[in-house]
View 1 (cartoon, helix red, strand yellow):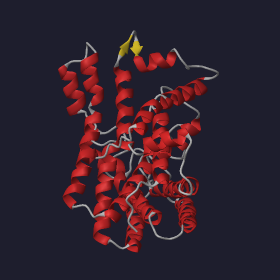
View 2 (cartoon, one colour; view 1 turned 30 degrees about the vertical axis):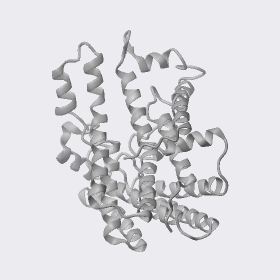
View 3 (cartoon, helix red, strand yellow; view 1 turned 90 degrees about the vertical axis):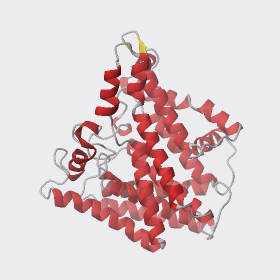
View 4 (tube, one colour; view 1 turned 180 degrees about the vertical axis):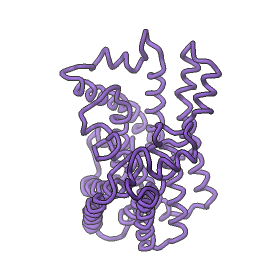
Length: 371
């Protein structure tokens, strides 16, 4: 089946993802534990964002390939643009510091942006996993073969941890992901002293997340009746969650190093979420304003992701008295309202809602920014 019109359920799920990114990405203080990223292992609501982004890229890939098969050159170009965009986002903090902070010098900028600049980040992870997934899809072609390759990738990722450190494969101080980070891009260019959560080794299991999305996309655009596709999507999601639970007896669930059970848990949740969106939004067109605004966000996920980070970094650097604009706004609005956790959660909700007027402009003028 080929499709020339946008799929409402997919745009809606992407819109929910973007709204969640607004909420989770820039908390000025601790929220409730279920809303915070885990320090090393475990799972919370905050852990679903990046895998769902990768999943959505895979789903969009399946839809795009059903219309036409792009050239390798154009696919590599798209991945390169996303990667370079990620590098640029990574330089915004020292760049804004150079512009806004009087004591921040050119030497500070060179040190922070070049000598100690982070090489991998969220967009770089998406670019690399997208490119790997594209090469696998173009090489194998068969859906069964791609499904098998996805699980082989997860097995390879898991085996790497166990072979490198058989006694304690997932120790924060000694694991294969950390070892790879210290080789490339090196200790000076990773996010944390112990590891980079978007490091190179995690791209292995991260590629599986994109491939899970690709296979979901094939179900989404199949000619079978809608209810049959929803049923298949739901069953797949439940089975992935079961396999993830069984796998977690040998491997930890960790976003920090993107373990195989972590990828599978998110794949299961992504399939179930997409099935729910198909049931709700593909049977009848959405008419409520909030649904239309979320769809507007979902049509422009990369733009709003980058805009959110840019705005947060700018306010974080902008000096206001003895603090910065971001914390000043927090301290003078919701901080310690009812409780510290509630105040932070309310602030993140307000930050998320601030983006909806821009989403309305995009909706009214049907703006879609593509890379």
